[in-house]
Amino acid sequence: MSDEQLGPTETSDTCTDWPVELRGVTESVVATLGPNDLWNFAALGLHASDPDASADDTDSVTATTWGNTRTRRNFHRQGGGVVQFVTDPRDFVAAAMTITESESPVFDSADAWVEVEVSMVDSGEDGGTRWETWELTPVEAGITQTRPYTINRGFGAVIDATVAASRLDVPAFDTDELLSRLVYFAETVEKCGGPKEREAFARIDELTGWRERASERRNESF
Image (cartoon, rainbow, N blue to C red; front, side, top):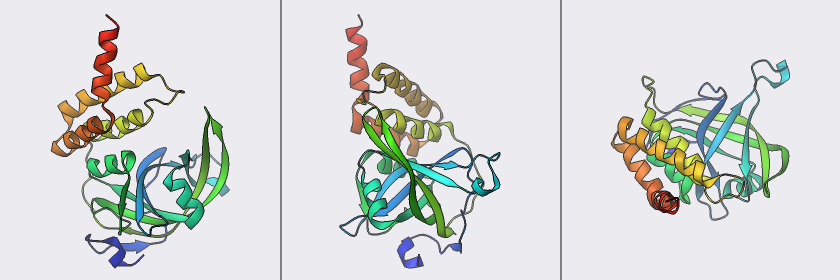
């Protein structure tokens, strides 16, 4: 990927491996090129291989798409995309919960990016929703920012809230439980988050109307 494609970020040091350490499930944003020649952004959980797995599987990284999403269709169409690791919760919410497209495949808030090739390795159906698991192979990667690592509970709550919010109205999930989780995440963001986290969570409120739904359900219980 050329520096021009990166957009207004610092020139990156490139390599051909994952630019960050992956463990467990790492939340990322992926950009895939659509038929309109724009990059579509979506949240993507990266599953690192089990460290106790066989030697052939220790470097494997997979991700699962659910439903007939733009990411799934573009993976089939293009055979790859650009995974990135963003530091702005507002960008993550935009990718996870809205249709966000751009001429550039990398958010300004990305500390690192990696162009990947994908191949489908498994598929099935769960609760009426088709899922497909993809193996991701890095082709070219870059680090655009290096900085001290900090932990903010508000940022983590925003990420978890996008998961809960995306499952509202999905029959396989209990709505009351999801709303309870969102109440907890909202309290965490208010107590521990900064302006960006609060703005990101306000966007979740706007997109889902979950607070009104939670209030209605509380009233129904009396």
